[in-house]
Amino acid sequence: MNRRTFVRNMCLGGIATFGFPVVNFAQVKQRGRFVFVLLRGGFDGLAAVVPYGDPAYQSLRGTFAFNESDLITLNDTFGLAPGLAPLRDLWQRGELAAIHAMAIPYRTRSHFDGQAILETGIDRPVGSSDGWLNRLLQVMTGERSGIAIASGMPRSLTGPFDVQTWSPTQLGAVDDEYLGRLAVLYRADQTLYGRFEAALQQQHLVGEEPMAGGNARRGGITPLMQAAARILKQDGGPNIAAVEFSGWDTHANQGLAGGALDRLLGQLAEGLMAFRTEMEGAWSNTTVVIMTEFGRTARPNGTRGTDHGTAGAGFVVGPQVAKSVVFSDWPGLSDRALFEGRDLKPTLDTRAVLKAAIAGTFDLTSAQVDRVFPTSTDVRAALELMK
Image 1 (cartoon, one colour):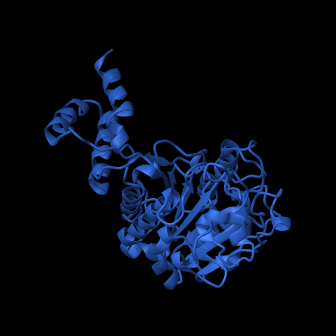
Image 2 (image 1 turned 135 degrees about the vertical axis):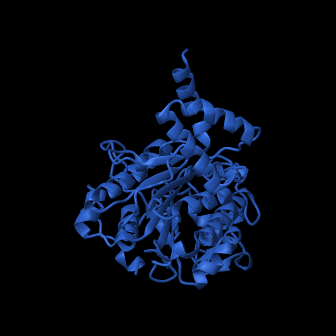
């Protein structure tokens, strides 16, 4: 192996993983910043945005039913799980829309199919090579850029528009002296040296906090969201980002207040609030959307968890939200109201929410929005969600 091959392999397989993307983005001229957070695994919306006021809730959930006193009540019907308590501040500021009875436009209990549909933005698991965030970049005018804050390129950003990735790791024993020696080696090759310099610059920008690589169960949400904010808020930084966290597939021991899922929701809430703080003045034109591929079964299973379901919950967060609201055409939890006798019935298409969020953030026309979601011309954007 010659020197050039050795250095390239190091760059692509080692050093670049802690800061590969170039941070000097073209000056973005679009109004607003948009972050799509995907919670992979299908989280239980009935345990996050809890319909405590539904007449059938207590009997349906049984030992999985929260006590009203444990919840952060939003109105007479819904309350947030105790882990989501940090979001109370967003609710009071008019910056939180909790979305319920929402689902992708295709009935599946497959993680693979559900995530494919949510990330491509079409109405079936196959049929698009582009992700909807990449199509969003394609239809926007002016200079714009996107980044994936993830260990790889998520499907939502895949496509012909060139985007960047940043994958965090802990530097450990890689000290300044070692990096200096590598810099001398890289300097002989201008292509590789440019990437090496970009890696160092990005690492300086976001810091060296230990991160969990996107696994929510290992506590990686807050530092990853802080890193995302540091990248997004810089002058000329990207205005579209995709972030993802795994660990939401709670088939067993899901728990209630203080339980496994509630602790994950606590990490999510703390991460969102840390992101808001880190964004500083750039928060004023930022929108964050949190979604998952499907909800969970309405009734608990035999292992004190929930199985793959249909409709669930999500969130739209930011100053561009019209007002704090639980946005839902609530179908109810009676036996007759359940989808296939087991799931919360879907009454809202995920694309209606996503259409509204991107239109409100970037002032897009309906024609542009329909190009982002090409099989959704019959799906009305929920424009009342946004200012």
